[in-house]
Image (cartoon, rainbow, N blue to C red):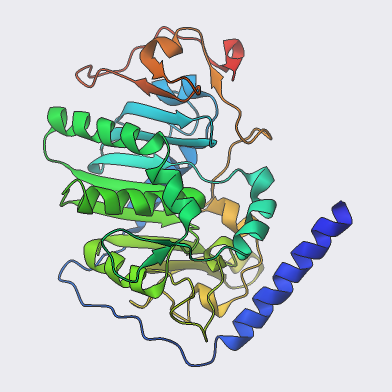
Length: 359
């Protein structure tokens, strides 16, 4: 079993090398329009949002809901949790809250767990474009990412929380974030908010996100959501997945812009990180595509922040006594934890992880 997995992994790296070697060939030109609202990369905002992308991984929902975890209040101040949505059936998790800095509704999606990521990457390598995106002629996307947001309990929970937040806080902006698969879900969520919910002020920043659609989809996406940044790190393998095939432009996956590529230069103690803002194509050959994406470790740490849960059980959930009094569940065991938006400071009489109950 171990030898077979190693053989598949070596095959994957060999194929990636071949794809990289062929990338010098002719490419389909990405149809990108210049927008007056082109995204401006903000390092400080990125280091804040990556914390949200990290906290959503936590399995201790007591600490997450009360915002008392080490990754939460100690590092991100003045955040009010509104809802945590947990789709137990599909091992998905997201939350919605309101922050004062930046002054916005924050939506964060959990990504793939670190201990299962190698198998996930191997599976992702063979994924095909297999579903038409509604209302976008010839735009095709990956049905697994699309369904993870649209056809689970995640979407209704998110939309309900956003509606409640805007009713109380007014017409503030929305920032959607996520890491890995969570970045893919964040992208579909942002499109949903803009196209179907008619939200005008929506920004997106994802970390280590895979490709989710073809070049036509990327063109539509960049027109609808120009305030989008995809951060990639070093040789992170996931942004190279599913593969980009240079000679099959209409059938291949294609990233949407704008990418910010993090990479290190220097030697030994003189190493420092460069943050390169890439071109508007989504597939800038001088950014992450200039390297062979073969690193899982680069995928799991961005800006020095770990993007994974500490547990080795990918779908483990821990709740403390009294926590589920704040929630509602369905027959499949999926549930939403919700707080009264009008309460200025969350005060819960619930125990920490020590008295928690795993689900």
